[in-house]
Length: 177
Image 1 (cartoon, rainbow, N blue to C red):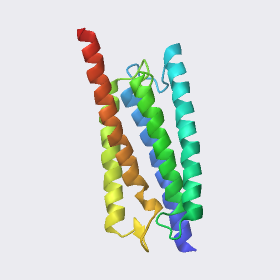
Image 2: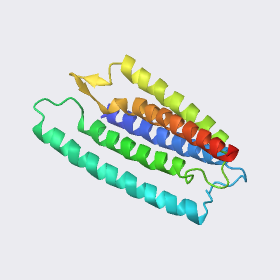
Image 3: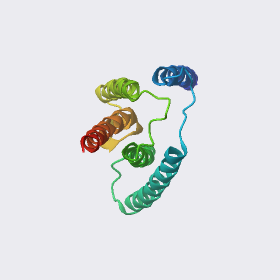
């Protein structure tokens, strides 16, 4: 019983810290000290299409995951981790599409500050993931557990950096022509 109360208290504290962190992140990345993102009509359209691609990616992933679970003789990954990986993959599809179509960064956002914040978030997630790995929580009985999520979140963010860099180089090349 004491363990559950401690776990609940830790979860509530983490949620409060997370909300405070998000508020600071939103203030830091905006150019007008607002917390709201401002998108034009074209960006909203791009974001809507990106959501659609992310949603269909999630549907296809879940169908494949259910087949994997149904026909697999041995379970190699915890169901929680399996579902969260699907969320990360669909989030990557959405974010990569929006970045490439210039609908990801809002009109009142400083992209350099967003990249700096993403770098900090990725490093924090890698540190937490590394800690889980060192404590033997990432794998239990030869099965990947949900403790891999922080590490995978860091990978998701790092995978977005090449998309941002490629878009930036493409934009510079178009400006030169």
